[in-house]
Image (cartoon, rainbow, N blue to C red; front, side, top):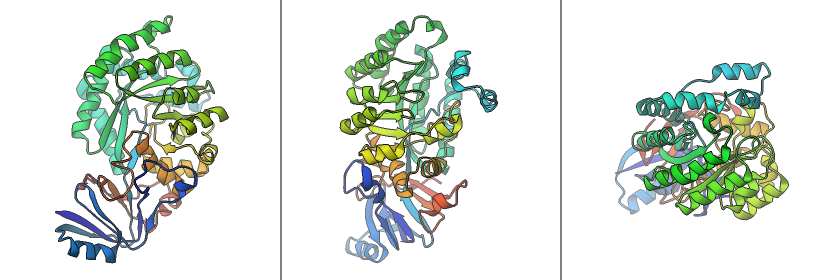
Length: 416
């Protein structure tokens, strides 16, 4: 039994001809089909013109269970949010109010706030509380069009709370409507008990945390915050090396607060993605391009913390693989809305609408090693797609600040 969506005014396929990502000018080719149609069960069976779809149904004896007339609508791939921190406890709105009065993110962190504020609340939270908080954000993100989401740990900063966060993410994989990918981020900050012996905490991550995470298969990726005031290049390299030995793939929080050559480290260790990159250097951009490491840009964080935006134009024009994500977290970017991220990308990072859509779908899927399954509307891929109540994809950007998504399908099932 299959579903047919026909008469689609703007069918955005992000067609990549089976390739896992798009670079440079390719990002502007979004494969739009007017008066389009798509047929799918759990996977996509047909993409093309409506007239051709009707012939395909007849010739292949396809049984259609539901037909949706999408005249005046836009259909596009589900958004892939490849960098979030959905699972946490507590609230940092008071710290946000202080930042509005001029106190910097780094000053708050030096006072024992920031990530450590969330750490205290997360350590005290039960597994069920973490699951409930994460599910609420996942469901909200789904309504805005996110069909695949990566979720990190990183607010426990000791063995048992980190494992509890990862166990909460494991439950979300089973109960959330999205595709969920798990990342271990024990190296998010240093806990207060190791403030004066940071290398000992790095040893704890390498010798105790990572082996348990790998043994229990609680994460696909290992991440670390390699930046000024956080993990050094040497510490990051040690953590990444151990994670790779245990079979985990690598992500990196890189060059968010200063240029510390974290992008170069990410390229060196074969990271799948390097994220943030507000202060990435020209050599870092070149290294990412040559290594095929996805540059995941998080414009919501620059907006929320009043920092300079990552150099999206320079990255794209260099030929680097560029993705977009929310960085939804309680301290530096509290939004789960990928449509908001698209708006920030085109206005404040000077990306085209087409580049932003590619970055939020196919290239974001590449940042999770999933772009052969999701991220574009191509025959054989998983049927994760959105119906937006606009006649052209450009209206997603033109009429900003509202939710345009009318229906969401994951694995062919209507979930919104």
